Image 1 (cartoon, rainbow, N blue to C red):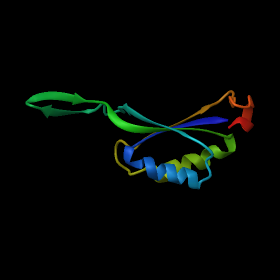
Image 2: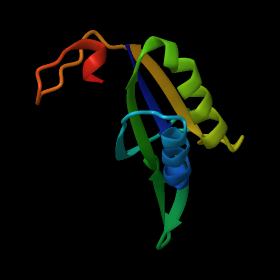
Image 3: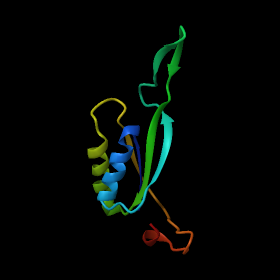
Image 4: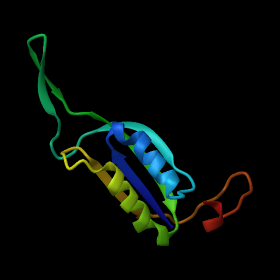
Length: 112
């Protein structure tokens, strides 16, 4: 099992959610987050004072999937979220050691 974390532009929330549901992704967790990438923000002026804006609003999708499904899900995220501009986001894939469904105490792949 793998955990896929995708950090994307806020305007991609609905299109990506719909694309993932259309691709039969069983479940996901979505969070509103803020952060910065390599650019570390930008400077703006507010009432004559220079202000460094370095936390950009983003949306985080978290999905746990079977190993065989990871590439397909990553492709859906890429196709839906890429604008080709700075700030499109990142995708992280990491192993998941165990999943437990709280209600039934089921473990492993069946608990996803």
